[in-house]
Image 1: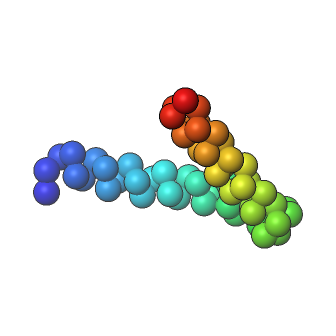
Image 2: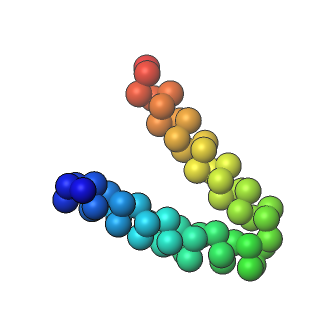
Amino acid sequence: MSGRVVFMAVAGTVLALFLFLVVIQPAVARGGWAELALVAAIFLAVLGLERWLRTR
């Protein structure tokens, strides 16, 4: 494997773990799945707005 592939694999793993520990686990512990769904909806809305602004 090249250095780039190894870096991307390690970075993806670290970021996925960070996402789980910082966003998903506290959301489920505090507010349940509804809070997690709200975070996901906000995330998708921001991505959609960014894409819409880019195509204008």
